[in-house]
Image (cartoon, rainbow, N blue to C red; front, side, top):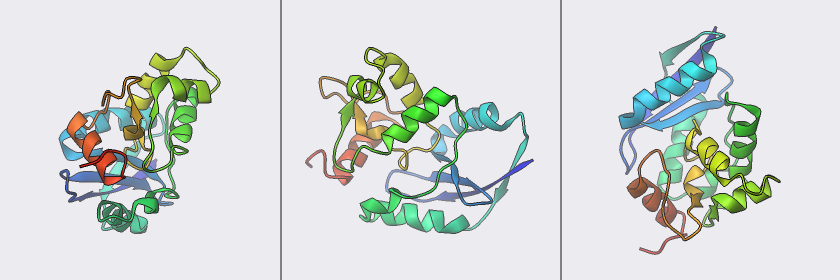
Length: 171
């Protein structure tokens, strides 16, 4: 059975769940108000092996690192360890999301092209939308072709805040 260590941390955008395994690899990062979505993804990815969620304080220092990100230490998330479930295609999309530099964005079609799957923008968008490790796997850095703030599971206002915080959008 997989043991998941969890803590709910305060952020400028609301309470944020930080969930990792016992090797301190992030398995989920999700806004408290979207807990049902997070629980559904955890169930989809880990029900076969079984899992339990256990409250912890700053497991692996991950909560401090995410807090530092919100306080302006933007590059601190670049090397945080993740271990996600998902299909091979989803994991490929999520891995590629981590290559988008802070302060830059990409549209869904560009992301599909980078993956060698030109024309698969919708499939990329679906994988992006099921990312269980928001912020660290920066799905907020993907925008619509025309520059619109589309498709962020945490809400468009949070997406805009994160992009401003990272220097892409001006205040």
